[in-house]
Length: 154
Figure 1: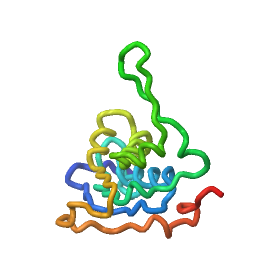
Figure 2 (figure 1 turned 120 degrees about the vertical axis):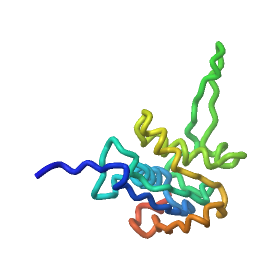
Figure 3 (figure 1 turned 90 degrees about the vertical axis):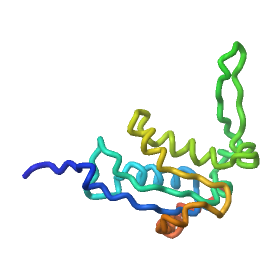
Figure 4 (figure 1 turned 45 degrees about the vertical axis):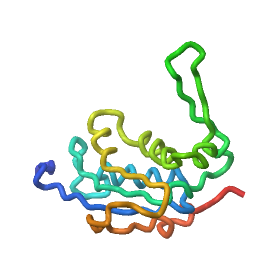
C-alpha cells in the first residue's frame, strides 16, 4: 500500500466564514490555523497548500481569558532604545483590532514559505461585513463545537 501524496489537481479549496464574536482567541486561532493548513482533510499533504480560504468577521469582539487583555505585544524599531509595547486591550480598542487575531494565527502557522502562502488565504475583518459574498462561503459555527470555546474568566 502506497502513501497518498496530493497533486495540485487533487486540491479542492473552499471558502469558509467564522464569526469570532464571543469566542476565546487561542481556541479560535487554533481552529483557523488547522483550516488554513488543510489538516482537517483526510488527504492532507504537509508540503502542499491544501487549506481553505478563511474569512473571520467580528474580530474586534474576540474574548481573552484571565489577564491576557493586559499582556503586552513588544516590537523594536531598529534604533537604540527603540523597544515599544502595547497591550492587547489597546490594540482591540484601537484602529486595527483584527491584528490581534491575525498575529495569533500567524504564530500557529509554520514560519516558512508555505506558511506565508497559507496566511495569504486568511482575511480578517473587525466588523460583521466582508466583501467575499461572491465566493458563497460556508459558515462554520465555532461557538457550538465546544462549551470551552466561549468561556470567559470570572
